[in-house]
Image 1 (cartoon, rainbow, N blue to C red):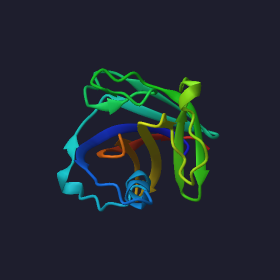
Image 2 (spheres, rainbow, N blue to C red):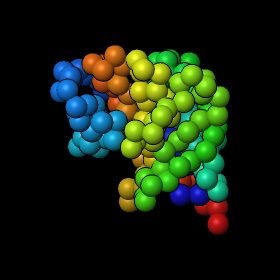
Image 3 (cartoon, one colour):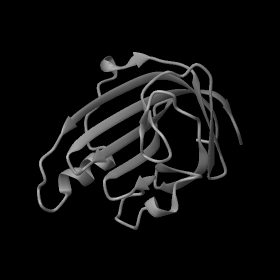
Image 4 (cartoon, rainbow, N blue to C red):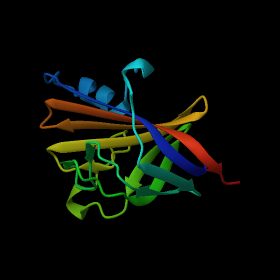
Length: 159
């Protein structure tokens, strides 16, 4: 995955869930257990993701899509982040620098990038064919579900 990746497609959708008592539906949502149809995506540009040696950084120019910032807040004026990538097999979890200490997630079997009790954000990357697919899965108040999927094309590879 090392290299530079340029955003080419974007998709956002949301919904609600009912508490199932054991949080299995919420955990499934955070892990990204939904089918994604590429036909639903919109073309999008303005965000570059750079990966190297377990670290990531972003650069943005004219990116005007809904995102979640380092504090788990839904924003229209997204500011690029940097941080580290934790890998579990072929899936990487983006853990940004600057996450407030009170919201650093405790181990729950899911690598959350943010979790303050009200909001949980899971931000993962994986290779699918020749694309890098980034998925932000968000649960707010144990009820509201948001998912943002960004598809990146490779700009250059780093050995």
